[in-house]
Amino acid sequence: MNFEFTEEQLMIQQAARDYAQRELIKDVIERDDNAIFPTDHVKNLAELGFMGMMVDPKYDGGGMDTVSYVLAMEEICKVDSSVGVIISVNNSLVCWGLEKYGTEEQKEKYLKPLARGEILGAFLLSEPEAGSDATMQRTTAEDKGDHYLINGTKNWITNGNSASVYLVMAQSNKEARHRGINAFIIEKDSEGISIGPHENKMGMRSSDTHSVMFTDVKVPKENRIGDDGFGFKFAMGTLDGGRIGIAAQALGIAAGALELSVKYAKERKAFGTEIANHQAISFMLADMATQTEAARYFCLKSAWLKDQGKAYGTSSAMAKVHTSETAMWVTTKAVQIHGGYGYVKEYHVERLMRDAKLTEIYEGTSEIQRIVISRALLKD
Ligand code: CAA
Image (cartoon, rainbow, N blue to C red; front, top):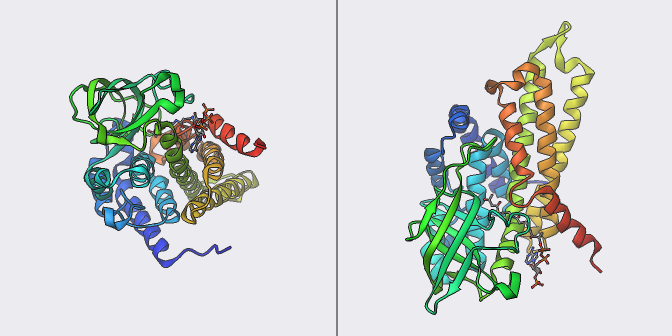
């Protein structure tokens, strides 16, 4: 097994690190405080090629591999995981879902501007009463011949207001249960769509999360993704890759908290010496580094499997559950090491701790990942 990164992968990692450390850091606290969407940063990151990283260049993407995507996500999320989730949803749910399952016409019309980062996409699966139990879709898509009529409400939608294109799962045939679900590309400015208020979240505060309501929204038939009834498999297959993005996001949060803690422990003095010289602190740092490194291997292994065209669903579930729980644990230790300073905003680690919590929840909770992993383990 080769643990060396290629020159190209290292260049992408460096570009992401430079942007995060030079630009994102400047206003990250203000954006978090005031829940300001990072419009200019998204535009700049699009110009740098981060919004459609893995998309084939023939659809205006960067043609990069998933390992590069993980490296870039880690660097961005060391500083600002709100920006990270915007990148992740656009890349691994929306662009990847369209590139893998869309028609040539759909790719031409929607994937290209999404991959260029000119517009953003969102993935609309969750509903008020269908979160973890995703088969229970209540949003309906009634077949009207040349079009579908969509009615219902979607919840917790990342990029809910900033996106121009929605990938929406809806039920077309209740009797068929999950096999009656379809996936659609719906333009946000379609008649009959209304958007709920910005959710006032604990963390990831500058990414925009909204409910989206559909009332008799007309969607042309050519905007359905895949065959009739393919929508649930589309969502599950797409989330397998999305979970690598969220795992990489959690990795960045843990790695960022570790870097800040090492720096602080070498500067802060107590009992006549830097606190790093106290074993209580240095052992904590050692454990944080070990857990973070293990999380990094999980993320890179899943990315590598995907790049090799091998099965990666179980691996991405393992990466997500391990890395998000590591992020929560490492950031809690980081706050502890910083003491009172860890509990105020200027030192960043309290924000990283708040942000870490969401990685255990979205794109499948830790409990859902354990269902996926245990089913794979126990089958036949
Ligand atoms: N790929 C393709 N198909 C899959 C699949 C996968 N990974 N996993 C399951 N399927 C298929 C199964 O083969 C089965 O198909 P058939 O019946 O035709 O054989 C069908 O889907 C149903 O599968 P299950 O019987 O396993 O379904 P289940 O009800 O037991 O649930 C689950 C499975 C894994 C728990 C699923 O419901 C799940 O992942 N829930 C969590 C949903 C989730 O992650 N939501 C996140 C929202 S998106 C988000 O957060 C985005 C954002 O904005 C950040």
